Image (tube, rainbow over all chains, first blue to last red; front, side, top):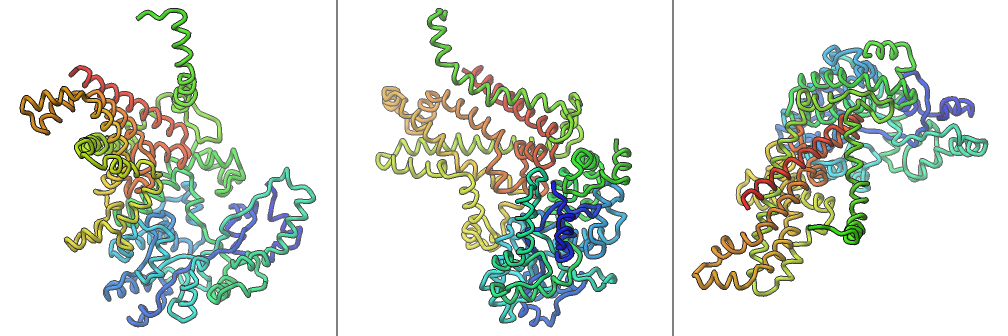
Length: 347
Length: 292
């Protein structure tokens, strides 16, 4: 595969890309072999009238978030709309806290068995957060079988006060409601006592492109450079964010997208998806456990124990895979000393 | 019966195409899977021979395999009841009505020709809680507590819900087979029973059902084998259910081989599905042949 990072530097365009977008695609050693398709963000959206009615402010910490849910529930409202049938939504709630405090540090250590789940206090709190939300029935009725599209529809129909999804998924009607002040948004809350200046908006690139080194001749190189230099124009024309921090023709962009963009420009830390970091077997297991925890069918301790057990059984396969295919896009410990030592330990 | 040289060529001519296709798409993959099942392989790297370790692990250390087998047996029994016995009941009802038989036959057959994905989408909406689906709307009007029945996500209900949908989809297929079999029952048998004073139920129970017994057994074996390998409807409707409460053997095999990238282990599950299907079908046939 073509080293995209080196190519962008050669074009003098590397620094023009948003740090968060590149961070999302980089391997553990900082190398970049994938090219971002766009810039996508995820936020919490809420109905402002529900909050105003109860005198609530948009939460900035997770304790405030849980308090908001409790107040909404007590007032007879459904606090959170969630796509409970999709495991990644449950895993978001488990991973918010460790991501906010330390980016990918926890998951990168966990995936190789370098630490146990219990050893990271914030990650433990993350599992307890999802269990608290589930066991107190803060998720909207019927969320267990709801998919992502229906989840957004539930929120749009005001079936719940809060939901988590990307600004690209707002319908025109919801965009109008945002402009009228009926809908607002807030970033991922901080862990209590660990607030800082970082902007906590999960940013990712949607799809990403790889280029085959063998096909990368002079003509393709010229095309790639042309595309990179017109990427913002291409993105704005599609009504999505450009992965570059540069201004473009925003006439196609609705107000809400422009407002969110102001926040995105402060984002330097890419989102870390757990569903592509772990070994394949643990990805499957974590998804199932996430769904069970989101329905309070298991307790947080069981979630953590089962995760550790799965990593213990399967992490060796991940490390072997990375040694066989060093560019395997789940990080690259196999190319570094630590990974090789881990591998020898497992063998 | 002795087969002469010319007859043998004729037999070979007619059986060879099916035999070749069967060998290519069924027999060879089974042998292939059996070989893979003896290896630890992630699908990319080198294969490590582990003997029967995958099978030992299935029965000793795997916490999902035996529950999945249990669910599959329950699911299979439900399918035999719904597809064979309800199908048989519908065939009797259909054969007893004097008019509009073709209309009802076509009407009942519609779910068979609708794709599984479409059927699952329909039932997802019918059984939905948010927005409220038709089934809970009707049940809730009878008893408000029934508004909140989680058909597809309650650990105690989702396997039954998936079994019902699969049974609903395929019962008409067996109804049609039974209907054709019932039409083949000679009139003189039923007439004789009538002269002896038998009512409709007695004729059905003592004349028609024994006459089409071999069709019932054949259909049971077909449903048995189909249900032991059931995949699409339970997977699309429940995805295995929370806590794998509706996990069946085939989706479990898929999960191990293609999601967890344990091709060797997934192959071991596939081999077990073949063996279990063979054992169930053989035992079933033996029981009924002995009774004959």
